[in-house]
Length: 171
Figure (cartoon, rainbow, N blue to C red):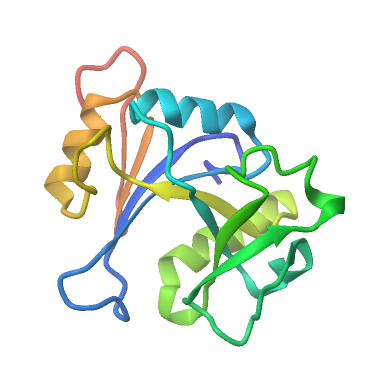
């Protein structure tokens, strides 16, 4: 719901299919929002990496050069011409795309909820890291980055930590 309302959400998720010792760490946002992309650049104190999209299989209609038969595999994709203008938040015309299946349950639920609210079956994602620092790959580092920025939402596997405007620390 928060993404559909224009929020930027940092996530750190340990999905069962991810290799031992590895987690997924992203900052998710509405792919239609150029403003969200600029906000992320300011908060993370860097230009985001090439970024990409986390998608439901039906998102194949928005991209050229993708194969839905390979879920959870990163593919190079090009936004189809009819959708280029409406996808201002995607960092590049050519992007990395990952179709989600049931093994990526939490991310898939996020995409399903976003698609239900907006009709767009994917979310934009960049790596959750600040400046030249390492990727936020532990809950402690994710919380540190969250508290050092003005990001408003942090999802750690399940619970959402929110920083309220004017509050000192999370509430």
